[in-house]
Length: 255
Image (cartoon, rainbow, N blue to C red; front, side, top):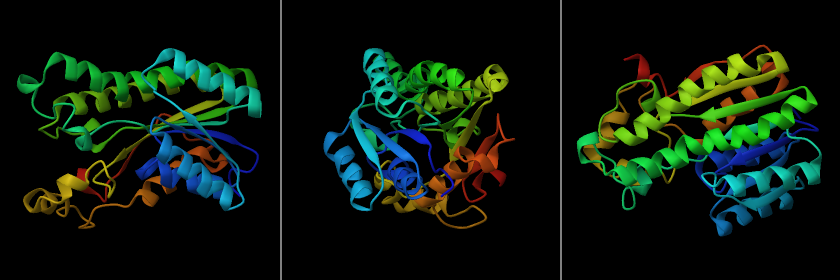
């Protein structure tokens, strides 16, 4: 029970990496807050956790909306009295291609650029802005930001997404520097190709899927492998770990 007695907010916990993390954190003793915009998906994860005998609460959340984020934090404080872990997992990517342009900067409309930044980068900013004061007051906390392989190397074809994830990496470093004095750790995971709905359409294209198999481990990752990394960073086992940018990509960024 590596998270016993802790309260964790996980954004985008209705599917993929967020869902896997919510299930694992609950299994490890955390009270899990499922901050998810998709009500049906969020409630289903809440039910799975409760049915397994663990504690969870769903809260419909738009992380790009400041008032909604403030309300979420207030509700969690009132219910649980503390927030020990924030996993800024929610984001949009290739699965949103029908709504937002995933292309070079020359082909990206300003509105799409702003929308992608609003969710991927501003959402991380807003959640952190309102959770960190709670952690300061209680004298301890762990923030985990979910970036991407795109945030640390030049992956072409989705430049707004890449820029937003690079911003998350930079924000992680400065947050770690700012809040370490309050015993708040801030770390970042950079997933490679993970078998989630976000990239399922891309993996169905043979020539693209083949590229993801060229790393040292020769395969795509699973959501549970990201959840495992997040669990370590959330737990007291990582009590001397902050400011880390951790690729979880099967070694793809090394070649």
